Length: 167
Image 1 (cartoon, rainbow, N blue to C red):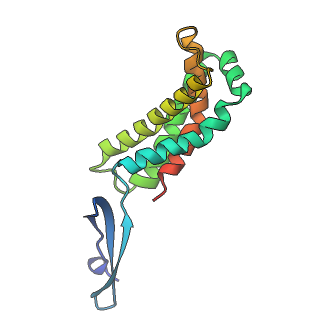
Image 2: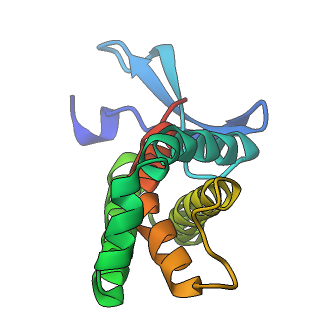
Image 3: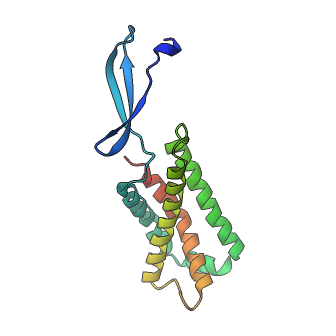
């Protein structure tokens, strides 16, 4: 098929969500069918809920381990912050390659919003969990509390990122 005859996909809003519509053509160039797939570049409430649930999936088992609490006491703050930056880097890469690789132009703000929301919500979920089980000594040792949240948020944010890809 020549370049001029290749089907051109379009982006359409169906039921409030963006979808990619790809026409399927026969040898004469007539559209015989279309393929519609979700075009997941907008951060919707459903995505936020998936991120929260995904973060919770690993925040619970990791946050409830004494090893994590002790690691936060032993690691230097620079190492903990490095772990936080690695988390954001992995989230950014995964989100880029799964949602925005071919469509970043025009959706940069949505991309940044999704990365920040994924990590931020993961931090909130972990912080809430650790506060509930009284392993975040807010007011007594805020640095230790922050270190525990960042360490536990590493796996929690990865799970949040993966769950966000579900359609």
